[in-house]
Image (cartoon, rainbow, N blue to C red; front, side, top):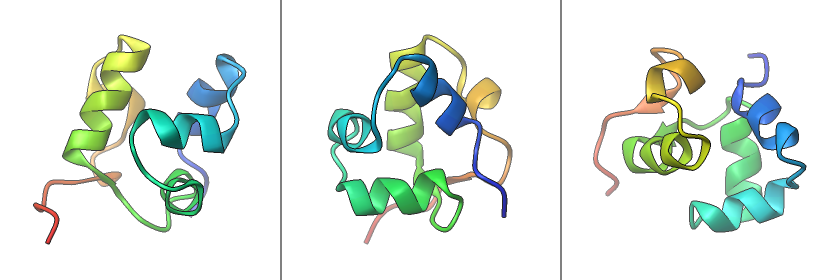
Length: 72
């Protein structure tokens, strides 16, 4: 699976994965997996990211890139 568009957004503001992971309250390892499409972003994380970039979730993420399941 190719990297998500979120990588381009993150790089556009000159942030490292670790810095952006802290914004959405996940570890750098977890964030890396999400950015590389191995794990989906939660709906809450997608919301925080969309607010940060002032873009709708749909613009930043595709249909299958966000999990609507509640975390267990």
